[in-house]
Image (cartoon, rainbow over all chains, first blue to last red; front, side, top):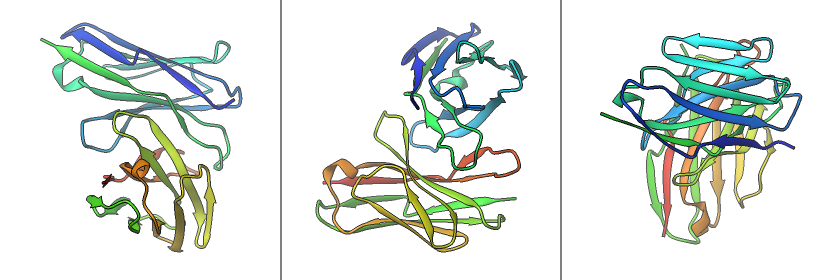
Length: 113
Length: 113
């Protein structure tokens, strides 16, 4: 299968705390896992990605973890700020240029003061 | 640096009318180009992809068609719009075979009445 499941669909956290979004995928051939952030009315923007040869990647307050055995990956935003409020999408892709990038259903994150 | 531009930014069209959405990319020769559709509040669904001029592959049938008339141009069209065509249309290019990362254009918001 090609599906990517993303949870939760809605996430509300206090400013300064951490936010975690989890995704699972079906295609064991998937080897590329990007995360996109989408503000209302705007296009999705790539914020961080991880490949299957890594288990962990961090860019500033963003941490992604990949568990290939369980076919799960996750995004963790540490020390959340109001500017982190947005829709977040995970995605998974196979190794060839023809493989489709399959997106999760999205998570609406709200960071409240 | 590569830039991707979509037009129009927004359209309001009547059911049964024709549609043409355009996308151009500058700064990248022979780009892999994609059309995605996003329902309001929904996830991103790949519609078409093209790896070269004159060649387009359909991923999902939504009574839409796509063409690649030039290396830097990707067109999405239909002769008869349906209500279900409303949504956000995003053109994207993939940095293949370098990083493999996918970058979206600003998008075209379509409302069908």
